[in-house]
Image (cartoon, one colour):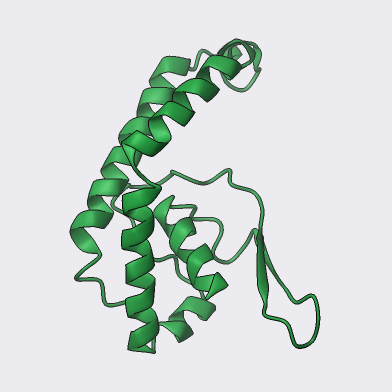
Length: 146
């Protein structure tokens, strides 16, 4: 269950590097459930907003062989798309964070000092979120796995 939640959210933000990399599966005790420990989100919101509805790895490939699990995954995508990946939810967070980091961005040697336009990057992120949200909304029902 925790892995499906992790995978759905990771797919939602199209974190393409996180399906075969950048997470640990951990068990605190022999009889406890596995826990997911994600790290490194540098490749979130990249690639096409119309990218896959599920990132590929052996874990999810095996899980999706069970249609009930695939359907549960699709329900999670719908839920998270409607409650998390929305303009209403994310744009105020982006705007408030942008206000805090704008001056530091201008001084960053890999961004502002190279001439990358901060306001353009913020708008690009917002556009990506809007397009990704719409893509998921329009395609999740017909999704049948790999």
